Structures are given as structure tokens and as C-alpha cells.
Image (cartoon, rainbow, N blue to C red; front, side):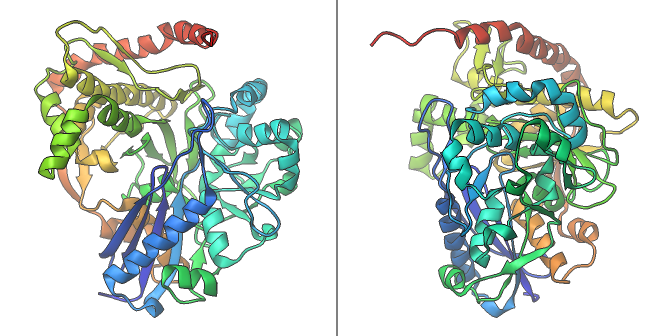
Length: 517
């Protein structure tokens, strides 16, 4: 082990992951704990901010115990986390509200309220109003005015946990610039809050936190937090960043034309570029890369790509789940094996993966469905169609970015997240997109990215790009097969057509009244 060591913590949607790395980038220990999602009403998805803190200190403590490190050797702690939802703090860092998740769609009316100014918002921030900060802030302002008065600052999960560990007060609240494209109220290029946008929607700028660089040291571990997580009081805590930004650095997605596919709870497709080209037509996102000043990434995502597979596992594949549990195997590997025996195209079966509404562009009324079912289709067809649907949605994104960024060569897609282990899914995506898919020698890439930021903050590293390239290496490369790429092209076009042709039906479904009691 080379000293000093660094700790990265990823505050995910379905769980918290902590990891300890030495100065050479070696993983010394990791720990994971599932977190609870609350669904108080249809369309509402919340998390308890205290759960973020509790799972963080417990996973950090487990890592410290597993690795047997000396707490005095920990140079920095850095958090990354969910980017589009909002948390809140009062004057003393209490929590006036639950965490309003990016999966929560209650703010739909305020997306509509902001739409007349949508192009301006996209040009300034890099992204449209969606189930993200701006409409969510407006929901709290208009729907819960008494609660809104108690809110001193709107913050990110990373801010809440880091600030609680450091004993911050409301005036210390911050947001790092990798979150800004979700804000609706900033100038992302200038990294400032935009007074014009705030005035348009009567949002008090004093409720917005200061904007910082991810490597700013925002405080040090308090004695209470140190006891909670088994570290030393006074350990530096950095501002941290969004989970996608951490993943791009951890995966060394640091060259224009490199693609990052985050096959996690959400299915995220990000393209590294050296140009900021806001997408006012299709409403995909442009956000700041973690490494400034000349790198950006174009971002689009399905809000429940991996979550759809978990739903399928729990609701439709209970037999396979039980079989995997009995044998100590992986249920997704079993489902993959069965789906691999189904022909490409799933015997003309298409799937819409937007079970929780569509987010790029935002449309809360769109839902999931299988189209083309026949009596010959079986469970493996349903599952393979779900995998192919994500690839078709990615093809839609690729076409958009090729138009926005002429001349940009798509070099390869680096895949991370739980779905990266699926050889079948990687091959499907490579075939549909015509882009090589690469697995990396590491799985803990978001926490690795965070740990690199922490090392940079305290001088362990002087160059984040060089460090990322040193720590991560490709191990498996899946080449696209030209004949399958040609075969999939019309199916991808049908998928895009299905998005538009089904929209009126989904809109009408939302108008169906509740059944009689």
C-alpha cells in the first residue's frame, strides 16, 4: 500500500458505495449499502437525507475496518452523487424537506410553466427544465410556501452529507459546477447564478448555494462524524461532484469522441467533447466536464434503464431469481443466457423503457410498453427487447449529437455500472450503434473519480487527466458487427417512430379518471 490513502463515496439512487484507494490507485476495500426509496403518492419519489448520512458513515467505517488502514493516513474524503434531485437545509443544517428525487415527477406543472423560456434556459444552463432543480424548487415555492420559507438553501445530496460531516451552517452551503446544467437558473459557462433567469421565475437568489470547484476543501471531519465513521477528526472533506462527472473521470473519458455508458439505475449516455453546443431542438444536456476548462460532455439518459431490469427481475422473473439464489448465481446472468438464444430484434418485438416517464426530452406521460407481442414470444423475448430498447434510445441520442457536433469521431464507448458485466448487452449496444464497446479493469469508477478529486485537492496528484489514464485500462473490447448494425438500423428507426406515435395514447391515458370506489 502506498500512502496517503483517499476515500470516495458514491450516493446512488438505490445504494451508497464507499471505497478506499491508496496513492497508486489500488482499491483497498469497498462497501455497499442499499438505501430506501419512499413513494408517498403516485409520481412522488423521496429519500430521507439522514439515510444518506447514515449509509455513508457505515460504509466508510466498514471500509476502514476491512482495509485495516491507519485513519491518520486518510488524506481526504470526497463524495459524488445523484445530480438532478434537490435536498434542502435550514440555518443549522437541518432538513426541512425530504430529498426530492430525480425520479419524482410531481413538478411536471412547473416544467410546463418554464417552457416559454425553455430555449433561453438551455442556452444558459446547457439543459432544459425537466425533473430537475428548477421545476422542483418552483414546486416547493408554490405548493409548500410555509416549508419554502424555512428552507435556507437548496443543496445536493453530496453537499448535505459532506456539510453534515464538516459541521457546516447554511451560509457555507455550496454546489459544485458539475451539477449546474440541471439547475435551470445558472450560466454554466460563466459558473454563476443567472439573475435574469431567477427574476423570470421569482426565485430568491439567496436560497441558492455558492458555486465551487469540486476539489475545494469545504471543511474538516468533526469529532462526532469521525467517531461515526472510524476516522480522525480534522480529515479534509472536498466539495465533490455529480456521480456522472465522477464516473467520466474515473473511466478516463477525457478525450473528445469518447463515449461513457453508465449501465446503472439510470441508463446514461455521455459523449466527451471540446465544444459547448446547447441542444435547443432535442433537449439533451450539455454539462461541464469535471476537468476544466476545455472539456464538456453531452448527456442524455433513461431514468430507469437498469431499474426496469430490476422490476422485471422482481415481478416477472421470480422463478429465475429463486434459481439464482439457490445456486449462488446471478439472476441477470441467467436472464442474459436465455435472451442470448433469442434472435436479434427479439422476433420483431419492441419495448419502450420509459416506465417512469421520459426525461430527454421530458414527458412525464410517456410510459413503458411492449409492441408486437405474439403467442410465440416468451419471457426471454421480453427481456431481450428491454436490452435492445436502451440501445435504440442511445441510437437516437447519437444521431442528435452527430448533427450538433459535425466532424466529431465516435471512438469507443466505455461502459461502467452493474450492466457493464453483461456481454450480451454490450454486444447489442455495439451492434446497434456501430461503436466498439469497452469494459475496463475497474468497477468502482465513480468512487475512483471522487478519490482522484480528493487526491488532487490535497496535492497527492497534480494532473487529474494523467492520473485517470494511469489508473484505468481496457480489458475487453466488443466490436460492432456490420451485418447486425445494418439489420438493427430499421428497428432503431421504428423505435424512434414509436416514441412519437404512442405519445397521444399515453397523453389520453393520463386523462382516464380513477375507478369508482
